[in-house]
Image (cartoon, rainbow, N blue to C red; front, side, top):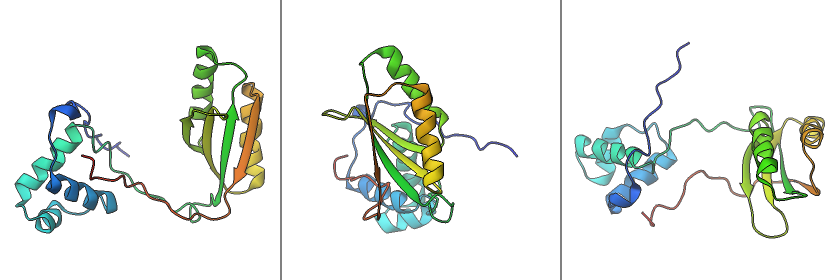
Length: 170
């Protein structure tokens, strides 16, 4: 099986490009369904297909559109458990951060990770089939690195999920 060719994104500085309401509307449509044909998008925003396609390409080149992906249903993919882990580091050192980045990159169940301000240094989002699988992730983490605190919070219900960002700030 051949690997699909990745679009080249982020090649132009976003600050050098001006975006208008039409760009915002195009982006909103693509965020709902990136498979929407250019012809359908162009009709929805009142452009012909070629100018619409050029606007999409410009947003890709500016890195506004990073990539197009399939959103997978977590339950149907047999990873219904979502756990958020608040992590505090025992020391703020570049080497610890490097090893932490390597660790979270190696664990597929960690799907999001953020560095924070406040009393918790990092928050991780973990998806797993069950508590036993989550516990295996937890043990892999504490085997490899020292943490001053690890606080797990199990999601009981997803109230909102979207990958769409507001477009009015373009």
